[in-house]
Image (cartoon, rainbow, N blue to C red; front, side):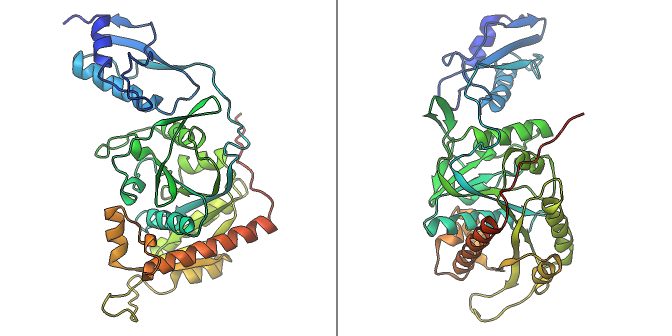
Length: 369
């Protein structure tokens, strides 16, 4: 089957630009450079501003549209270029001038409840009257949309000072952004490190976060390109490391603390949070069963000379709340609600101490040879 330009244009009418809802052709994003060589097709998309936040996802959607509506044998993968008109430049030294404190929530390994702590800490801070933002920086395993009941959210663009910025979703008083808003929830995110890092930068610098007292970053587990991107992009006020009391989790928590406090990163540790500290049955509220060991994070905090910010028990409502999109911190009178409210108080206290006793954190600058 012969391929001709109008087939390409017709296929692209099925792809909509998330910022306006118009298709690629209506939006005027298709550049006048379609090239067809047998089954190989190439062209470029031209965006109105530098580093458009929807560029990467739109390229993927265009590739799929060509394969669906032109033909499955069309050679299109990797042949769509992105061009940008000159736009507003973000100050690299202070990309979020309206944000007072940036808190990274990290864990040495997966499965310890880091995202649960991030989500409930953000809600608890908002309930205390602070302006709070939450960025789901776990590019390959975003779970914040589920925890906030925002799985179907598709953010739009706001015009701010001549720039078009992603408008974060807002729920429970928290401004929320996640890569999960821009990809199919059932599809794996198969991106190389550079592409993931660029997407994360766009969620930070191309979003309308506005004025915030606390900007909470839910980091992926372990140490990766994403962590390096964050410390290169933002001057992080302090980090919180989440772990269970189990020794295998504590071993990885040590590495997380070491990553932040090393000379090259130098981000202060606000403290440790011990998640799944004990199990308390609903019918026996005064009983504690230490399923994963007792006071493991307390011992690690003493060993590493950092603060123990809180111990969060295992309660069924935490899992149920996360699955229903209603963080348990919304119920401030529950056992877990009170635990997260206390955690928020401790975080505020430690941030104030840190800001009064230490110099402002500096971004990590990488010098290439």
